[in-house]
Amino acid sequence: MRILVLGGDGFCGWPAALHLSQLGHDVDIVDNLSRRRIDAELGADSLTPIRTPEERIAAWQEVTGKTIGFHPTDIAQDYDGLVALLARTRPDVIVHFAEQRAAPYSMKSPVQKRYTIDNNVNATHNVLAALVETGVDAHLVHLGTMGVYGYGTAGMRIPEGYLDVKVDGEDADGTPTGELIDQTILYPTNPGSIYHMTKVLDQHLFAFYAKNDKLRITDLHQGIIWGTNTAETQLDERLVNRFDYDGDYGTVLNRFLMQAAVGYPLTVHGTGGQTRAFIHITDMVRCIALAIENPPAGGERVKIINQLTETHRVRDLAQLICEITDAQMELVPNPRQESAENDLFASNDTFLDLGLEPTTLSEGLLAEVEETARRYADRADLTKIPASSLWTKNQEVGAPSRVPETA
Image (cartoon, rainbow, N blue to C red; front, top):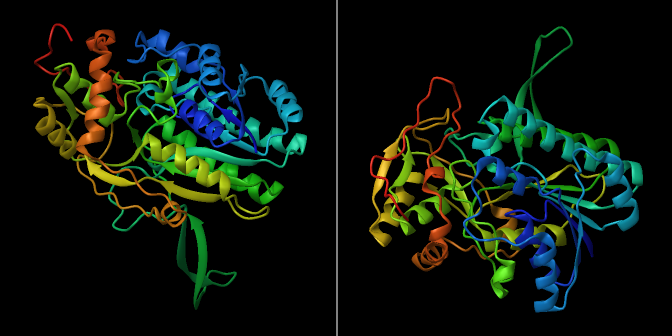
């Protein structure tokens, strides 16, 4: 299949593009390189030294003999360029990663809040509008987040997108009829950041375009990714994936493993009682491929799949890593507005039924990520580790009291 990977230079997009190319698909990457510019803005480079897109693509061809195209297009701002690209390439599938992905960054200041809304919502809507305008019958696979549901305790397993409910029937003047009416609704959202809010808005855009224009859309509600490399990115050092460790972009488990590798106390926010959904990066790329192979039929509602393999409480993860690595754990104030403790139960039956064999937490894989962190420890800027983006102005977030002077 001809596949466009939007945001294909990023943490998820790059390994997904390589995996799809390795499977034999004709893959092109579309990216405006905004994530690299945010590195410069924050002064926090990837721990792993990532090459330019051109060098990465050349290395992939050298190692595998397979070609990947690159289009430096800003799909959020250059709608005409996007339309021209779709009309020229006429992809069978569009994989949409082209959104600012960090909740802390989206809450940093009004500048980042507005940028996240402008970029993410415009990017998604431009893709939908361009598909309609060009008449390209592409299956759109979008990377969403479990975070649209918030991090409270639901008291039930969160379903895959939709909730069957019964409501009391009424006649036109509001008089109860005594009937129970069956309804299927989108599972209620409760976003905890501007970033998560953009994914909620995406959901409603998708629902409209699926209903109105019969677009074929799969929305993947993903857990937090851990791990850094896949089988493809490990083929050559020039193909290495990003490794973010800073307080804005570093995902919690990867951040803990990096902190352990450089002797920095593990920064556990609040009580550490937050339960999160997780998925290993190798399972992420497999799920993208499975979603592509199993599209919804035209005219159906949006296909929503929970993309996670396990859930863990943050302090339990920190304790596990401390036991494995002899690292120290330190509680610091939580920069987020969220419950101190929560449970999280979510259905992930669809991908399991499609044959996904989950990669679950193991000491071997944790050690693999820590080894990557140790290898590039000299590139770490320890001043970038503490969270600096606050959800409200009156919060204070302190760094751990024992911060090593060198890595």
